[in-house]
Length: 535
Ligand code: F6P
Image (cartoon, rainbow, N blue to C red; front, top):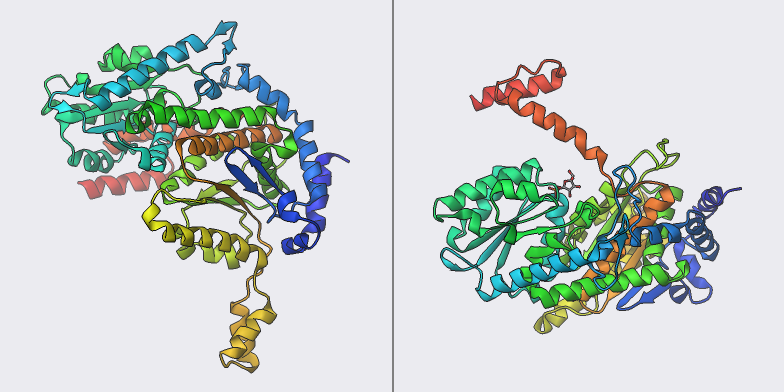
């Protein structure tokens, strides 16, 4: 018997067990919660018992998660379909030397970081200006990992934002850049073109649009552009002065890149000190991930809970539900982090995966989601494991009563999901409302909550830069551990290529420059209709 099979059998055998029953013996909450630094991770409201946890930990050991993690941290080329090391952790552990191909990569990382700091200070203090004076607005143009991270972080850390306003343009839809630039003064705007490859069509198109917009008012627009990229040649060809080009190596994956130059907009927003706190929080999580035993290791446990739900209980999606309005972009960020990393059907050795790839990830901040899709989470036919997160305290002391309500809602949801409401309880409620007979039964059945629906809660004191950095690193390592257990290369993304190629080929067809030979009937019909509608 393999551990995998044991876990499948275990999932089968506990399928009808009520999660609530697990609380009848011992101190379930303490036994199935872990703390590190500012975080309490409570996974007691899942159907994982001591035996399951033990098996899951053994699974992580069998898959050599620790050795793979060390290989990552020490610069081995674990992204072997691209022949690259995976060293985003080097961007936040600036004191530790790391070698790739025998070369210490850290002097350059530190030098670039120092240049970022100096530039961020100059922008914030008005030493770097636009043609019209001090920079009032920063527009980050990027997409995917060159957008989601800094956009999420700038919103998350809004209470620390004391630099110029920041805007994020990602979509090739002209509406995005149009609406963003509409209210801005080109003479006091800094445009940051963020693209690891500096070839991404959306970003390059938007960057050209921004350049034209600026050129209408600014004599030398390139002076108000900065670039974040691995390609010095392409940034130079775009006309950006190398003094404002912040480079990084190919061992920083796009969706893992906000810790370095791609985080420049965040650094300008909250200042180098705040940014350093963000890195510190992540580095502390890195150290915990590297050192803590698996049974006490937050990223490993979060991954094991995820693997349990996705692989063994066959729950296809997971909801991420931050009770924190400023984490509104976290679900979108995690969609890229998790689904671009582990949404793969072939394992490292090129064989078909014998089980599901990573889950569908989705979510919204609470309490908004409660008034939208929680109905299905509570009473739908599918089980959706929920990952709640909440700060004990908000940043608005005058509105502490609102924060209390927020926390109460968060805790109440996980309680409701687990506890449910039986038919007997629902019947009693409806009887008191005056229903009887068949109608009583019918009305009561609509009000039954099956309960025993799993959730985890991540609790932290307050969303500071350190805490936020820790949360993001926690999720990064969770994705890594899940990928190792599934035998997936979490660091390539070949699945995004085909659509990009076809889009490039379709643009001339839409413009009527190419007949579109060989296109399927549906695509030809849609092209023809667009052409006729556009005249
Ligand atoms: O298309 C997917 C992707 O390659 C992501 O992995 C990446 O974050 C995004 O595009 C943007 O890429 P770049 O930073 O090179 O513009």
